[in-house]
Length: 370
Image 1 (cartoon, rainbow, N blue to C red):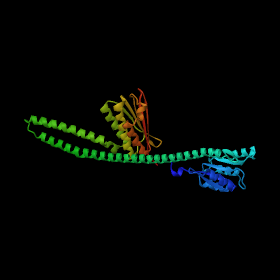
Image 2: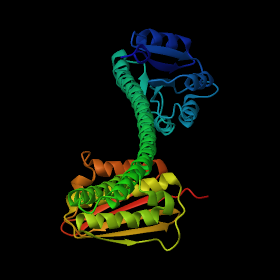
Image 3: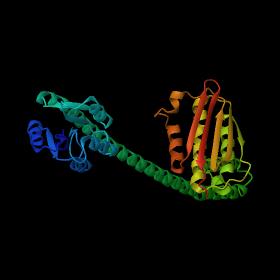
Image 4: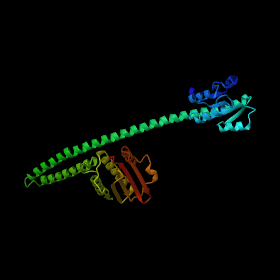
């Protein structure tokens, strides 16, 4: 135990100096300190400066007596729950005892004191005080650890968001370079090949067939380049907006998987910043990927709308239905990625699945409009 917690304090209040010093000699030890107060006023000053394991309070004192002192001690936040033991003479009547309990006493000890009984009773309160001090320290340490963990999580999320933003910018740059540079080069190569093929002599059938084959290969390569560029960063997202990009992605998904995909667009034109548009589109891509991999569905219904100042994307399939255990499984990286994408905007994701009846995912992203 720390040194700060190893010595509990006991406040002794009595107008008789001889009784004070006798109690100090009796109770003072290496594990507990005795603080003396000669009046109720002095006792109130002590409890405002220090926490005590227990207070021994003489019931009869001039000025502010023990009963009033106990009441005032109980009214203060710092000493509200400090145990008060009244010291009283054998001549005290029952009414005085009741009055002491009403003032907040936990026990009565009649003078002359029996040292063993007094020490035994105080030891209980001292032990409770020390345990409470340890508990307070542990709670404070836990709060500090939780705060440190919270800040670490915030830093990690900020870093993840930054890395995601950098990744999107890099994908956009690569997609543009692939589309512009490689696409233009292939187009130029196709034009040159066509020029050469048109100038071949009529008897060069083998070369003409080869040129035709090469032209077809170039066309296929151009299509592959366009697909790769679109998957990195679809130009329709930047040029026509999120609604058009969702429709394009749904069509591409239907072609690749054979799963019907119906999109219900918003009634009004969406006005979104680049970050929210990108997050919503990537979330949609991830949800379609999950459907293709795990759902065993034949139909997907997609709705895009604005509700209460938030963009709401709903994706519902008719597949086998996600198990509740899989919703929060840390190994479900796709869903984890979806949650991380909505967090920077203060968004939310709701997932519901019924066995044999499909899965419904509702993603909400605040628009941040003023």
